[in-house]
Length: 500
Ligand SMILES: *Cc1c(COP(=O)(O)O)cnc(C)c1O
Image 1 (cartoon, protein in one colour):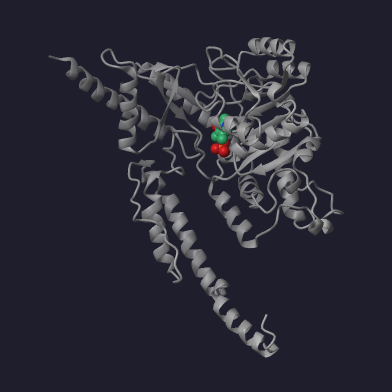
Image 2 (cartoon, protein in one colour):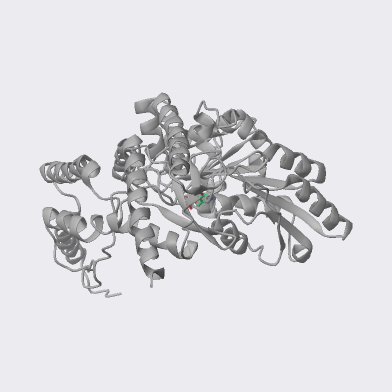
């Protein structure tokens, strides 16, 4: 410390620094212009979507990076760079032609909610600091709890996605069932080969990789065999093990299958196991009024979900919000708090304000993105009704595709329970896996629509996953025509190979 410094010298230095940092607060005219440029850019992007490919083979080059420098940039140039070096490469998740993985689309008011959340920088971690923001997030969670049929004791957290939602649930289950270093090697987790891979990731991150993981066999529709679960739990108990967690799926990623949740819940209640339902993809179909090809209603398909101890459900999938929002719901909020609540001396002022549980006590995060606005704004602006209609439309689109593709000579998987189905073409000459791999490539090369594939029991299947609010009959018809054309081309090519 230089004791020779006068107060005047310090003030002079501060004045100089303040002037240099001044660009961080642009004047109102500049801010207005920047906001206009960015929103125009976004509006034009959305306007172009019907003509924009869903997929481009182009990955760009390493030379087209995003270097940072001391020099200020110009916003129009930076937006042009985003367009050139980002939006035209790879997958376009905003496109209605996105029929691979699990799409969603990104309803535009979700972006406006993010703008509001970021520009006001509201703090939604602790009730004391952001009572309005925390109330909004908790009320959204309560609406989700109501949707799944949870009691008042339930609450949860708006996380970044389904992976983190599952992780929070497993950590909560681990602590609620008192799995520690003494019991971990006897602890048993039950799931199926069809759980999302993030379930295995969360098991490891949650410190549970030393537990025994049992793969319960599937029925012919890729659903957990509840009878075999009961048998396995019984055998494990008899062997002195500690069964503690069952992970069921309500909408698997590969085939959209829903495990028999009611039967599984009965087993879990009888034996004191924690039941987690991964409804990251399928959960929002609870908003739909629908009968599947066998006449089963939505409440019939999801029967038992309200008995789960925890549930993951992804608003950035089934509510069509922009990426970055998954939710975990826990039937007993005290269990969630037990795993995530800490106090710090520097936060002692926040202790008295306990009208609402704070998200910081219900998740690993402290300072976080205020995710509530990106969900609340679209829901309030549109009302729930168009969301219900869009979800029902997705179920119908999947059924349309399933019937049409079967009529065109494809082999199909089980009739869709939700909006995902699998299909493949079995050629009379040549290897089926190679044929189907080539078929996916042909669709990708075309790029108007995007599909993905999966491998089940060594066989390559193509997947249709309809969940973007922007997907309508037009996209499904285009895919059907493209597949038919591509099959014809490939059949000719395969036949030419075997000809002498
Ligand atoms: C998408 C998905 C996840 C993972 O969720 P993210 O939001 O991508 O992290 C987990 N489970 C299922 C069933 C999913 O479909």
